[in-house]
Image 1: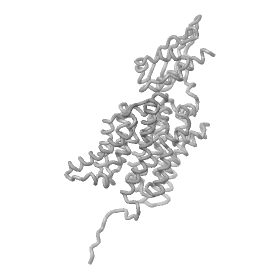
Image 2 (image 1 turned 180 degrees about the vertical axis):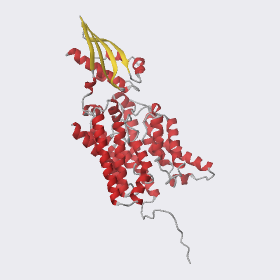
Image 3 (image 1 turned 90 degrees about the vertical axis):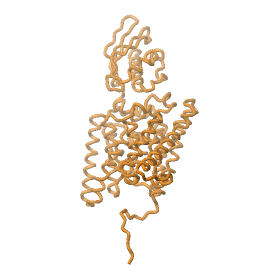
Image 4 (image 1 turned 90 degrees about the horizontal axis):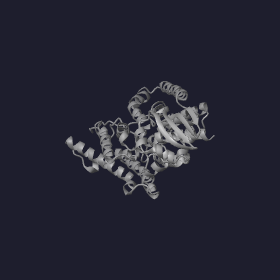
Length: 470
């Protein structure tokens, strides 16, 4: 009589082995690495910015992060006295995968030592949870969270050398947060060109996640090959679209705002690659739709109801945590009425969220509405203004004394500032630079590391000039 072996498993027949899936994912990521190298290294070099190190910086990020992942897993097994070969780590544990993803979702100016640390954290988060297939959180996102949240002040920002000199704002979402959620095309899109720049990826952002075009191509390919759970990205982006549309219709904002939300930050990259991770996402089709709705809701909550400019990274990690609950509700209970009620509750939450965002944060008024002339004294050929305006810290966070003599600005003093980096204004002699360039402020560069404060200073000066010369 034959003995039958009983094994645990899903027992789903598929031509896509795990190895085939992972290799395909790596192949799909190659264009992202090439684009990141061109955008952040080659193009700035062509324009005369950066050096040889910057040209190959994205490739260096990918290489170092991947090698660290291999090394950490090798040492982990070695310490456990279960030594594994490099071939095993590469072909069965897929040790380089977290490192590759991590290198693409961090700021371009991240120090190498911090990449090594972040990649170590990513790999350890995977191994300490049991290794490949048992991790409850996406390892790359854990490492990225460690870098961008805990060490945010050390990452050096998202602007490559060319962007530092040509763009007066940081990432589009950070610019929106800093401007107090002033939702106008001129405020959110124009500083970066048009929405086509967003679509092709020619905007500030993480190393390799800014190209929406590449994300859409990757989504089409991976869906065709049946390598990802396509319902998650569609319901995720669909939820973002619905909330954005409600905001557009109720606040008289153009439909461009929908595309702004979809094409900004790492939303499409996260939706295609991170949210669809087979290990950390729901099993059932209904669970994937529910998960996508939850993802979209959390992302918009973080973007518009918290000080954090981007919500994709954190929302996917939260999604990873509640995937266990989603799986239980959609597979264990297996009750259509319960699932329908869950979706109905989520829709109600979406409506409440949209209402809260609309009432509390969103405005389509121009930044100029925050400007205020406190006093204006004219004595012969001297006119003295005391004015206040918006800074990075919010409305009225900057107060200035501006003196015009014979139709020219001759003195600017900061009376009050709630800005974090006010000292950089003084150390860079920026007030005198404003005076020297008072007739052409648009061509005066902002201060690296103090982008928002220097930008708003110029806005206040320009409004004061308009009042003086009218």
